[in-house]
Image 1 (cartoon, rainbow, N blue to C red):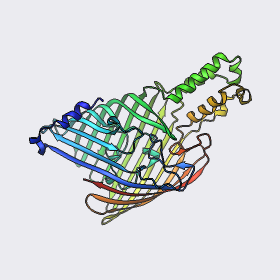
Image 2: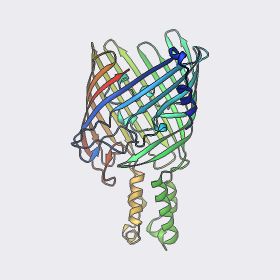
Image 3: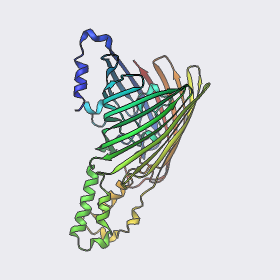
Image 4: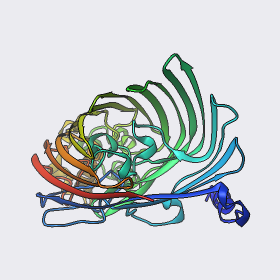
Length: 417
């Protein structure tokens, strides 16, 4: 793995330099319960297992993380973080969330090289740290859409101060990878040529951020390649296939993800007023590939604090365009007579709508800060899923996605050490 050098540096630290090394950690022991036996809750698109009706699932929300910070000198330090969040495949690479060198020659400039957090969201730096967030989970409509968590590359940050304002800018580039999963199946999709820029204005009581990221998909998932190749074979060897499936060759090319480029644009803000806190985040996803639908998502949240207690509400939404495969004008009666024809048709229908979320969620929750390092959280979500809009959920029949309203209860114990 690319970051083994950094990890070995941490392992080989001299004992006499223990005061330079800080070890910390965080975790969540969480349960999820939903009232749908058709749709299963999952945290993001990388998860191939979820929580269905009558399940009391500890693995969906439970997380354990550990972080090492080693101060080489006043300007340079090494950071390594490993997080277990019930990954589909548990390896050193999938556990490693952070592994970078950080160089800060001044208060204004910071350079990082290695594996950093992919800076897409308002809560990027503590996306998996339950204790750092008021909610029981980050809004799935925004955070569940992009399962990519790390960037193998580097970034440069600059901070300036004007009166009581902090002005920050960041540029980053690199590559990433993540599982993209359906029910009980997953494949790894790599992103290459990632570059992005972010701007932030912050004061004591408020902040505003904007971020832009562009990435190229490095390779295809197996399902995508198999469907495309299968359709090309039928078009080549079945006489008159262009009459059965018009423009089959052109459509087969749209089934491939390789070399597609996607853009992610987000705007977010925070405002604190006495005992109230407000958060809002909006994102836009655009791509030159039909499999990656244009998606608009966002949320607003309000929180009221009374001593050690927080009472909050969140409204989140995600919108995209469903792909109507009937628009291809395929002759299904004739296609049914060709071995494998309907399987390719149904598979194409599923693939083209694998990323078409259409839902909104209203949440209410209570967080109790039990101690300085532990917090209890309970949250109720009521999610209205539109027909063919369940991409953020797992279901056992991808072709049949009825509209449904799903209630979910989250109970978490968050801690740090």
